Image (cartoon, rainbow, N blue to C red; front, side, top):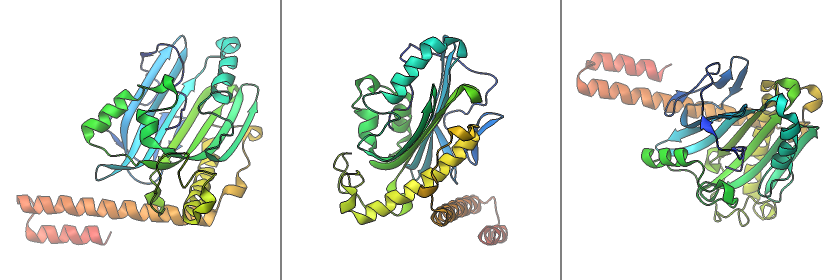
Amino acid sequence: MKKILLCFTFCFFIFGDLSAKSYSIGSKISGHIEFYKKYKFELPPGEWTVADRYVYEQWGFYNKGYILLKLNNKKAEDIIMIGENVIPQKWIGYVDPWIVEVVFKDKYDGCYKRPEYYVFEFFSKGSSFNCFWVYHLDLYKELFDPEDPSRRGIYSQFKAWLRDSKIELPKVTLGHSHWFFSRLTGGKWFYIVRNMDPKTIGAPKNKHIKEDRSEYHPHNISQYPEHKKSMEKVVSIAAERHKQFEIEVRAKEHHKLDLASYINLSLNKKLNLQNVSKVKSSDILSQLKSLNELFKSGALSEEEFKKAKDKVLNQ
């Protein structure tokens, strides 16, 4: 899932912040995810399962986040990693150079233009930064055999949960990342990273998995017009999401990015309506399945079952 900040190279220990809301692994959430009362982040339509959570603190540095999955028959159709780093102001002299190194100079990933990024936009001034990019990903390689040797072995709890829950991930994903940090807005470094199965937006099948050979790589995509159309859909969705992200993190106007040229509002509305329709259909099927089980067990009479069934179908 592209390197996102899990991130301090110190030895962390688990620590709970009682002032912040917490979600347990396996819990279901929808609508939004809350970090604090004033920091809530919208989630795409549907039910999301918490597949991993991490909370670390040392020397005043605090890092908290979650990995959320949208599941369909044991298959992850959508993956979101969302979290925060709280960086204490008293360590400015030590932290600022580190931020520049991690965000703008990392060898494997970061807030700078890379060949595999389809779209990249950013703002930076001093230690403040606002980063947005869209990309494709060989997800299994990123999780189990990342190029960055320092990241081999991470996500162990998440990978164990996937194995124990028998969850299948998409081999290729289309993703977008959002990073923001400014001491003018509370000194919190928030990030959202989303990776979608291309099938969810009607994309054609992939013949290639490896990132450099992928149909979605900027060097190759002009040869695959249908894949390009799918990537443009993701760009529009991602750009609109970043504008919402800037509101959620309380970004100052002069820190915001101009992404208007990337956003197709009519397309986003159509895709959102399709997603809502899928969610409703899935919910109806789930309700009908539950009613059928109650009828078979004898908990509902045939008349009660028919009335309940009609109510679900006509809601």
